[in-house]
Image 1 (cartoon, rainbow, N blue to C red):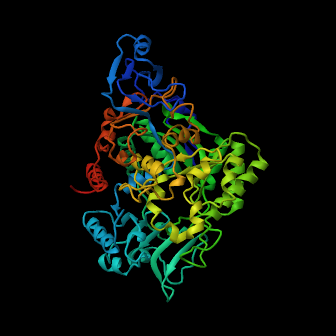
Image 2 (cartoon, one colour; image 1 turned 120 degrees about the vertical axis):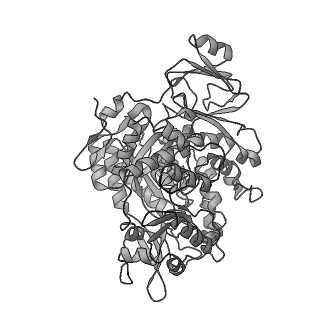
Image 3 (cartoon, rainbow, N blue to C red; image 1 turned 90 degrees about the vertical axis):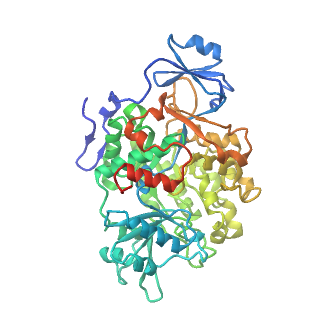
Length: 589
């Protein structure tokens, strides 16, 4: 039982041995009594308790301080909250952990307001990067004056001898310079791949922008990260999550190589998250996992593999989301289908038989309808009561399809910060009527479904303050627009908190272990300096995360390598990126 992993000839995955590993991050010392603060348990049995007790990494008691002291064993320690607020450990139901870690080591192009700024930052980054390829993330043409896709000429002139690949903010388009296209052997004669689009000029030449499946034409030429780079990126991303009070995630589209890196990090006691891994849509990987069966509770509940992630369409910002009618600002374009309904139905049917969850990325109303139709067919073939099929994003919905989530038992995994990022241009894409079915949290909640909230990081910042604030206000960090964007679709504060705790836990098949401060569950909790359920919405963004705890252990006392990449306080993302890269030797100070 000492081997860390079990690997098939086709694909590798955590083996049953990982379930019994002695490696654990849970606190196993004296009991801990947590008291003298506002405690929101998200458990209706325990409203406004005075204290709770942690024993051997789990919540052991919740109730009055007097009873807690009686319950706790001799020698128990006390954590005095000094009137701070405690929430269950926050859960990001949809984020790309490795992509987040890699983005921390790439040129940061988020929130730049012109193409000239993108080029300037890329050139500055190239001067410090030893890598042959320059990789960036986060540009968004909708923030630029003309809101048009860029063309490569200016970038190619600035960096003629270094290949450059810059991801759009949504991850569904990239900009390549001439050198990158040369190395990738992309020319005027290169055809558009299925489910992808090469943006071309009037003469048919590639402009440098590649949408959805066309991205692979460029990315296949980029040297893949090494196993050690993936491991270090994973640790950096975990630290970034922990500093915001995030103790669990859903991680969609994980490859074999990434899963193996997670295994190594967990075996070294550095995986201070609980990860609901959703494997990528790879035939060999899916077959291997379906044959093996779900992996649950590995490394003391740190890693489970019991879901598969598929894509049906692209993103709204890059006009790849599949719509039932053409884009209002691009007549004739109805988006892209990245896979077929038959494929989704086939994988979902096999997943039901193997005991796996299926999650499908669907943003456009046509994409969502295809996913729902595929799920309906799979459930007819293999009736399953507690399947917990998910649709990731569920961003634009036809009114006819909104009730189908509840009818089919499909869980929408949505990201409230997508609304505040997209609100300035979403109506232009969709028009005044169709936009009412976009980011429609209240319409879905009123049908009886629960929403699993997340960030889609690094598409959005990991910051859960933004997630909660957007959910209750439909406003951005500057509390704009006044009154909120379509405020009738907002969540209540109770719903917003549940979407980031117990509802997200359920979407990850983890509600019996995490998601609330309840006896028997892992002692994952976060301490904040203000009470989200009471303070005015406009001051939520000023919250400071004071500490986070996983399995009863303060994450400030985590392994030194994790602590080195965990930046305390409210530092800027740019500073975080540079510091992390310097700490890990990826760039010079």
